[in-house]
Image 1 (cartoon, one colour):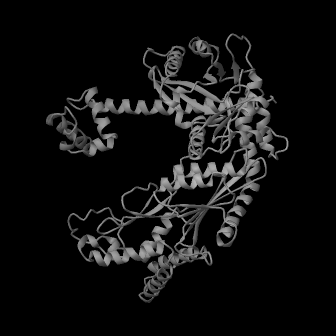
Image 2: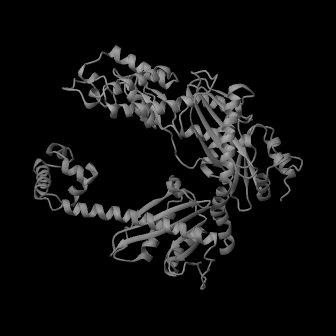
Image 3: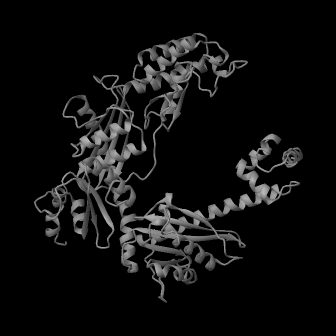
Length: 605
């Protein structure tokens, strides 16, 4: 390990962000500090107790940089932005865009309705949730409709409906659409729905028991079964009631447990005194548990809304005040962030930790396997192919066509051995005639590398390794373009699964069971799948345009306009003459021809 004594003495006593680098200049880890000198020194002091994973990180550190910030809040935000931008392997990064379902009550409407949504809007509606494992939002919706006769339709009530729908006749709606209930009466029912969603379940249970008894008395046994199942679901919800917890208290609980190498965060949701759900997430962050938990909470609320009044955490967070202020500003109202020392909140934290511990025990083997298949495979690939650096960002290209038509190419991106699907891109071959995969590959690689200065993040990051699907021919075509950019490139031949490097006559034959070869095969197969999917889409669109050109007065341009406007052939077939004429340049005669064509072909079938 390099001696950083002089550089450590120069560190400022100010807040900021530090960036750990390996020998190849790649970012290993990004952290924040209230005092940069004190925090960074801890990594290199033998007297400081470190986890096994932190010690592994320290061994890899070849250099570090830092950025001073004016405030500690700025350090918190900057760290989060740098993690998202650079995706360091040893930082927490929420990789999916998972959001949870909520129940929405549109209280701003004259006759509010309830619905399930994953997007919360500032439209005056009330939102309840999130609902997750064990209690789905759709199940709660069914329960609500079996208890309270509120509408689920999309009616805007601009005029009265002529008759009631089926929901009215089976007692699941008060039929405000036909004027059978006043706004005041309907809103009383909505108020009961909101009380129930806030935790008051006694009246709901009484109503369900009444409906069940009435259905049995009237020998409506199918309806009785519905009410019986609703009561069972309600009992399940009631069993999640936590004793002594105020019914109006809404909590989000985050806890972290670690075995020194692997860690798990548990997210527990409490609404109206009931546990709505709990989920576990494996995390890969090194360093202190407090930092990992802080980073997780920060990123979680970037993807999910804040509708609780309080957040409980398992560790004292060094940036707790700054994080609380940041999240309060994001929410638009006061939010408390606490690490409870006793009482019911402490019990909730312990319950959450128990869930995380159980998950960690079961998941450790799976996490170890996943790390071997990703970062382990990347390291192995560097050694086996004698690459200059571990290929953090890998790109692979594939060409797809049939008889030279609809020629397309795909670009897939893997980062740290895992697919970065948001960075995948597709190309239509523009300059090549007929079947010439070599020329097509050369065109695609040229177009891709010409975009290195682009603002599109898919292109602006320079790849460490490019894998070309094919043998020496495809590799030579691509290398002629890639060589000036100082990017390493290999060709993966399909038949023998051999890897070729430029200017080498003999292939690199990796062991069939090696993680490095399996990683190359995964990215190659993904590029092939992505290219084939795009090719099929274009071919289908071309065939559809060809069919539309059978209509009198419709050429290729008009056919494209029809598909662009209506998206699907089925929508064109259903369109009226007036709707077709809305397309710029379409005359009534052309619109009528399209309309008649589909009516005629429908009659022929």
